Each structure stands twice: as C-alpha cells, then as structure tokens.
Length: 295
Ligand code: TA6
Image 1 (tube, rainbow, N blue to C red):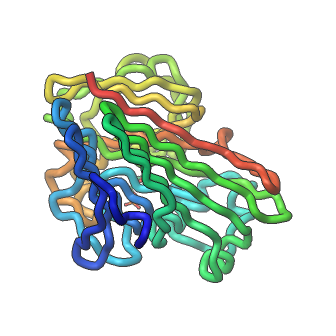
Image 2: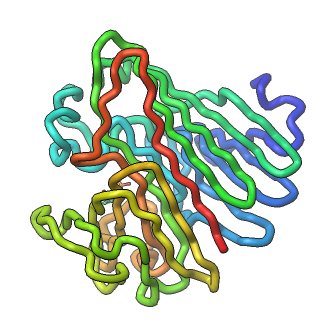
C-alpha cells in the first residue's frame, strides 16, 4: 500500500481477519479498521479515551465491530422504519444500518503534521452494492485527529439518477457509571421514542438513564455530558441525532457485548434520519460532519 510508506505516525496492522490503520502520534493514538472505515480507538495523551470499544470486540470480515464509530449508510436503523424516499432506493429486505460498515474501504489520503493527522478512506459502488442499492456513488470518510476529533462523511452521487439516504455516525462513548450520567443540550427538543411505538415526545430536562433508551432527537443539538471528571462536547451540522443505551435486557441480545457493558457506555449518533434524510442529485455531494471535544 504505497500511500502508507514513509509515514511518520501511520502504519497498517492486522487484528485477526481485519487490516487496521494505526496512528501513533506523539500526542494521540487512533485505530481505524479499513472494513467500514470504522474508527475503533482515539486516545489523547492528556485527555484519555474519546471512544468506547467493547471488551469482547471481534475483528471478523463482513461483521461490524461493537464500539468506536460505525458508519450507518445509505440507510440508518431498521430499513422499513425509514421514509419511503429512502426505502424506495433499496432492493428487497435488508439488515439494519446499511452496507457501508461491512465493506472494505480504500485508504485514499494520509496527511501528517506536527499537531494533527488527517486520514481519508473511500468506498465506491460495486457489483455487490449495485445489487442492493442501484446507484453509482463515492463515499469518503475524512478523520482529523488533534486535541479533538472531527469526522466528515461525504456522499457523492456519480449516477444519472437522484437518490435519498439516511445515515449516522454511530458513536460509542465511555462513561464511568451510566446511572450518574446527565446529557445536556436536548432540553425542550422533540424526540421520537423508538421504544414506545415511535411516538413523538418532548425532552423536558437533561437526558438520564434508568432503562433502555433509544430516541431520535429532532433539530440541531450541541450535546454535553460529563464522565471521568471530563466534559464531552459533541457538535454536528445535522438536524437529527440518536441517543441509545441498551440497558439490561437488550444487552443480553447484542453481539460482542458483555451483559453488564451497558453500565459503561452510551451512544450519541449524529444522523440524517426521518424528516432530515438527504436527497443528493447527480454530481452533487453532501457532507455529514461531527466534532468531538473533551474539556
Ligand atoms: O442506534 C440505535 C440502534 O438502532 C439500536 O436500536 C441498536 O440496534 C443499535 O443501533 C445497535 O445496532 P447494531 O446493528 O450495531 O447492533
């Protein structure tokens, strides 16, 4: 892989069945699996872990890893729960969260500086993808690592037809103890409760956890929550997001997930879903971006 040669901080290693990019910068460490362009670890010298990764994670071909930032594209969640503009683009019944997270992406750019590393991975249409989703596309994920984390998911329509997608950066965060976490920023926003017949509700105050939570929040939200005496701040350009913790019963059904792991993680997923789905015209692009800061 010529791109990786003569790089100061970046190298390719193998975890079980998967090739992973390791970034060993003096200030931070990051790991990205080429499968799914899935960021699995980002740890800063001073600020610690930005992400949660399952202690029982498996590096197997064709199977998303539990943790880090899975990329859900070109549909989010259960396909049939999407607007018809999204489901009409998909051939036949398909699994949750699209196919991008299970495909092998190409490493397309590495830029290293004294203070940061920028990595780009790219996924293009294939015979396999065209059978499921009959559109030509180029999907690029750009990671910028420094004292913060920025991720940009760029969809380019290479087809003659318009298409509509739902998508999410499905980020797993580490927490000391889920029962003590309060997530701020969503106060007074509407949300769809995926666990209560998809009813629309209003978030009164901070989001707290004493049961399974699986909610789609509407509008643009700047999330903040505390863990390990540090404050996580998550911003995005999207107008929908998902907050999820599986709690006790759902945890027992999840792959690569110890029964008690719900106590030390939560997901906040910057997304384009429901009324916020994205229609991309031929030769146009759309970028879903997020920035994660720890203070
Ligand atoms: O984003 C929340 C969610 O849709 C949950 O309902 C749960 O299914 C989670 O994603 C994980 O999905 P996965 O397919 O990665 O196990």
